Length: 225
Image 1 (tube, one colour):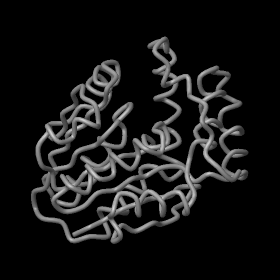
Image 2: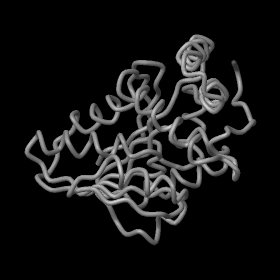
Image 3: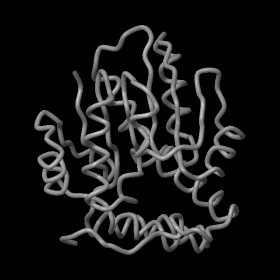
Image 4: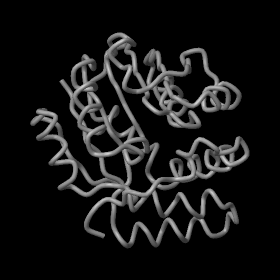
């Protein structure tokens, strides 16, 4: 599995239904919780000395489960984290407000590429969103994240490999959901290897950004001041 797949997921189609989105969000919540997605984010924040109060922007938050988990983690650490989630899909905003509400969380509709108009944040994170973008969009968004994050940023996504692909198929099969059966393996085919992140890092001119492999079939690109 040498290069990124250019095909699209059902999740990214204009005609995706709300029932399909609900099924997808439920699946992604399970994957994030038990297969490294949430842990990669919490590990990033655990690895650094944090101020008592800090702000986080979550780009392409999807169902909102990771933003919610980060809010709960920060509270348990005695920190006040104000977390803002943005997503271009209005159903994501409605779903997150229905299922993942917290006083420190707010969700609203916006494009990740409108980042410059959203203000400054201590941290900017993005989970399972970058593999939906093409290479040029990735470089553009990385530059924006590095520019507008005062303390650091994190990109958390899937690692592209045949074992990861097999795992995605195995997890998707028991769901009997068309969107999951299609999108889970396509997500891996659109995902990343170290050399992809190295190339994006160089093109975005952020040489200090760190690339790390994480369990389970995860890869991160991050920076911290």
